[in-house]
Amino acid sequence: MLVRALSPVPKTITTDIYAINLSYMTQISDNLQTIGAKLKKYSLQYNRAENSVKLLAVSKKHDSTKIREAYECGQRAFGENYVQELWDKYQELSDLDIEWHFIGPLQSNKTKKIAEIADWVHTIDRLKIAQRLNDQRPENLDPLSVCIQLNISGEESKSGLSVDEVTNVAKEIIKLPHLTLRGLMVIPAPEDDFDKQLDVFAKVSAIKEALSLELGIELDTLSMGMSNDIEAAIAGGSTMVRIGTAIFGQREY
Ligand SMILES: *Cc1c(COP(=O)(O)O)cnc(C)c1O
View (tube, protein in one colour):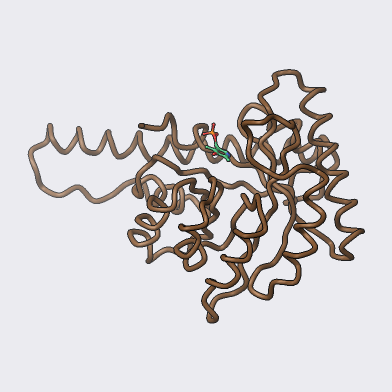
């Protein structure tokens, strides 16, 4: 895949283009391999079942070319934060079999586009959003997989539902026919200490188990863990880590 036939253009230019392509592609490929190896290592280390932690490649603010490169390396699940950006990429990459995850804050006037193109929404933070997504989900598509965003750190500025609110909203969501409640998503307050990170993740994991019991439904997803807390997240029971920069490099704002 890396070595392409070179067309007969002047040698210097050919070499330049070739060099750019090569470094670009090997970088994303290398990064995916490095992260894949980490997932394997930590899964083994913390007695997690094989392949129980999925990698969500967070591609916000990176163009479609990079997503295509990651796709060619075998990555299928991509996460986006902005409705219009997801919509544009969805169109540009319509020839690929991508699983699209929406992981940004979702306003109620923007739910329709998401209902039409996303496979997952991680950031349900009120019932109204879930109801709109349900009502706007086209009949010919599978139910939309959703996670409730839990505000575990209790900060005023962070979005997500409190532990107390989660159960009531979950009970309503499971009645909606075009949504499938998969579990919980968290973005904990930044923390460098491994043990403190793990405390939070273990707590979220326990909340998910309790919720499963209460609902009588086995919730299979914990969307938690980013670049700086991936190990603690896996130790704490994450089933989906969300990684952007370590795959695609710095975002261009
Ligand atoms: C941007 C983002 C990520 C990925 O962050 P990186 O620092 O680029 O790895 C993960 N989760 C959410 C919700 C995000 O918005």
